[in-house]
Image 1 (cartoon, each protein chain N blue to C red):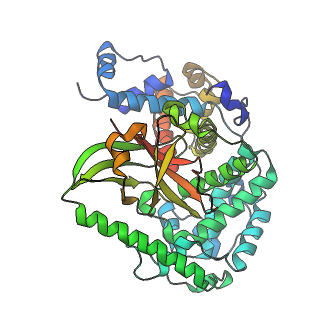
Image 2 (cartoon, rainbow over the protein chains, first blue to last red):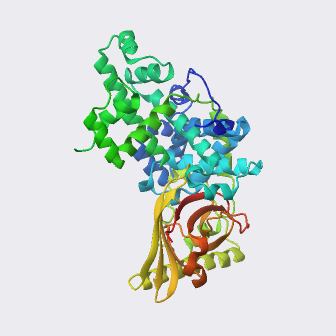
Image 3 (cartoon, rainbow over the protein chains, first blue to last red):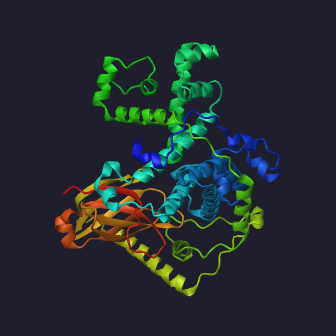
Length: 217
Length: 254
């Protein structure tokens, strides 16, 4: 991160993260056929989506809308943009589902990719254009704005993944990363051996790396 | 020495008080693979320190809009969608699956394509087939003059190769990328000058990411600085200029 990126990625201090996905799990609105998909694995969901099952679209929406909305909202700074892009991404993906190649990556990665394009379109429409000259001649530092967008996407994805980590792994990572505690401090606070704490931290980091790669490539 | 254990790389990225041994550091210095792994883990660790609060998504309102849009007729399909439905369809494009009974709530009405659209689509199919035939016919008789890997730009995914080949004196550029296409977009292959200002378009890249393009001999001969092979993602906006959004890129050695 360089200061040049802060135009789009605002710095935030430690925040209390509310996990809309978990909250949504508790709502009583979704019933019947859709409910059956709630426990579906990502692979099962891919198959159902590909077959055009509407209940499946509903579940894909439930799982991915918080991420897509947050990315669009944060990148463009308006809730209207966030809503329109989330809606547009789901509708486009549904209509283009025949061209989705499951072996080329995860469904959420595909949706985030579509969202990225829509966001770039809007940014461009606002006149925040990029000069191709700059993009081509400095290959290591190209397309500054997309890079900032991709950093934002990665952070949002990672925040959500950290929130999904089981206890005590999630707690350890939140204390270490978000609250800046040392590993001995965490061991004392959670009453766990220091070796266990470090081992959880290692496993968590390797897991986060895998999940991020799954979504963004 | 074998590669470093993932746990050790994670330790190093996390900055725990288990520093790498001299032997491990030695290995790292001489092993690009382990260095890449460490760099990736360090980046994940760094990014993970900055949580991004998930916004409260107005899910119900958005879902109603999604349903509303899907219940109304779909807009006229993009040219490539029509092309995919015309015989013979490119092998990589699968037909939409047969509709299931549950879809009745969401009718997918694709309007009958207008004649001009069919003609345009036929032209696209013709072009695609033409390219395919060329590729197959010359595969075994051409010499590779130079080649480069194509790598994803920041924020993009995918990779591939570009080869400048000479087929019985006729230069052509063969592009092969493994990168997902985007709905409502097509891709275009460009030769861009290292000055970053001048460029030639070579043509449309089919969704399967493989194509071969004739290159004017004057251009291929000296390349004159037109050594950057660029694949762009283009909206259907009728504008011939580069969209300024590139998916992958590489530079041919001169």
